[in-house]
Length: 180
Image 1 (cartoon, helix red, strand yellow):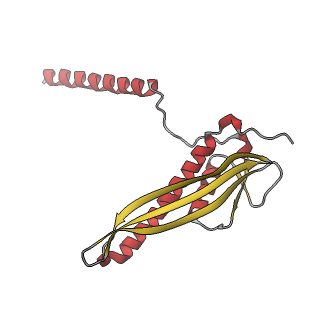
Image 2 (cartoon, rainbow, N blue to C red; image 1 turned 180 degrees about the horizontal axis):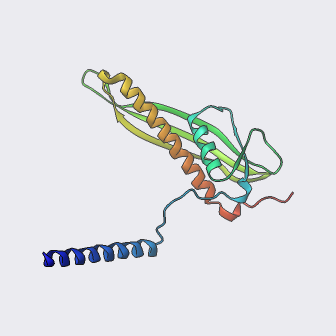
Image 3 (cartoon, one colour; image 1 turned 90 degrees about the vertical axis):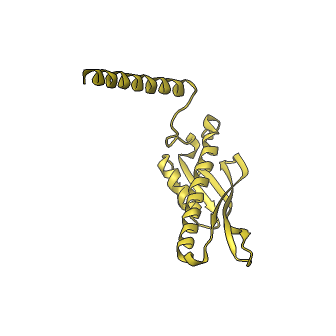
């Protein structure tokens, strides 16, 4: 019995040493958890300009902006950043069909094009992102597949919002607040 206890104690020490070694290796290579991140100072007050104000992407984008500390304005204001969403489109395509010409697999896509300016200074000129996901279709489960498609669209919109924020964050200190 005492031998078993000593083996377990050694095993715990080995596991702890391995965990510590892994943490040190991960920290040494530059790995860090993503976290919420922070926006450039010029984005403290942001107006989102779009001709489609009620899309899933816009809802996700404004949520992410607020989470990162930005005040999302209802109308353009002096000194505020303007995030222009010139294209916000979603849809689906048939990827494969059965021998009876019935769709078996679909691809849901979401595409956005955006630009960012502060005052007269353009920080990002018309960049586009497109994300896609495939899902199988079964005509016996129509309601479940429709719900799955909607969940996929929401996930794609959230992914695009994070990608747009990562692109904006990559500006870092170059997106300084313009002189007033």
